[in-house]
Image 1 (cartoon, one colour):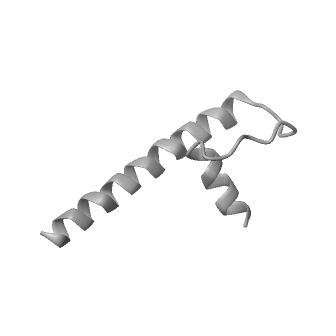
Image 2: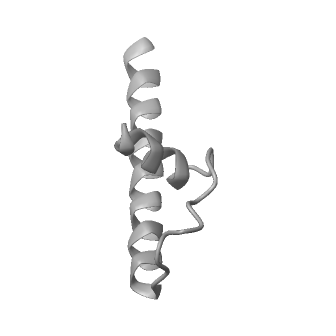
Length: 53
């Protein structure tokens, strides 16, 4: 269940936990994860469109 919560935070669907420790490196890591997740979802949409044509 925590994986779903983390994905919701990456996609700005849920607020971040205020008690979590803050670090610049963790922020960078989350930013890169967010970008890769969005690119993956975009590729899934493109593949679905190509398959439906």
